[in-house]
Image (cartoon, rainbow, N blue to C red; front, side, top):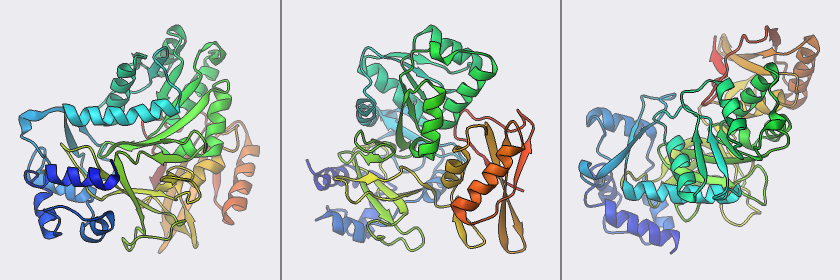
Length: 405
């Protein structure tokens, strides 16, 4: 079945009953179907998170983007609320199964098998990624070990005691686990972890971050993937392209647009990822603006994102004419192994943005080294200041290292 076939089936299923999309499809002239993907792109307007949040405020608590009666739904998740009010997302058993099928691609790329023991170093809050990853691993036949409700030291002990072979967490938390192990003289070499599946931050596709994780975890393989609560698990690391993410094209129709104009960008230009969920009928999204910046690897077959997720369209700042993305700063900082943690302070001097970086490290040599590395990478002088060990926050979920001052 082609992407167009899947899209036609999706539109047939949602257009009569979904109160959010039915009027939009009618206004776009697509209520009776679509002739081509090009027609869909030309006629169908984007969906934004702000529109979904406003819809749930107008139709509390779950909004009107429901294709079936409420009694058909059995799963509740919600977004983190870092960029807007938390968004509630409901799924039926069928849509949930569709997402577990997408996780099969991720686990296959990571070479996870029924004989593996998978440790989930998450709090298991309301975010979709935790639950789909866990359910999909259980469906695969792996032994699933939840780390919710435990501190970092207890999780380290559990990883070793249960002989976990696969670890699921954010890139930041993989490094924090290693940092804690070193501080407490905990031998990571005693663990059986051979693969670390990461997501939630761009770091999983940044070579310097991957190298730091591999080194700390006795050369364990690092496998990145990508998804959002709003859309589900959407991409996995291409086994043939380290640090590149492959969109699951059997489940998503992907586009890359210029975030300012909304128009299709040049094939090899950095742009915003737009996704249509082709199988999540219960809570569909048509042409959803993810806010994530990507670059397509045009030389590769299929829809492959070079370097994974570059950053977010609303995270980039311009400092003295230079575009700075959090992922670019992260790559430079992580190239200096002696730096254990950092924080970026963003401020204004008149109409101009300014940044400064705080780091935890052993001595002043790292301060000079990082300042020089920033100058080499960005042709920009960025102030660097050393702070006492343990001063900066550590993160289990998405790291929030950029702060306004």
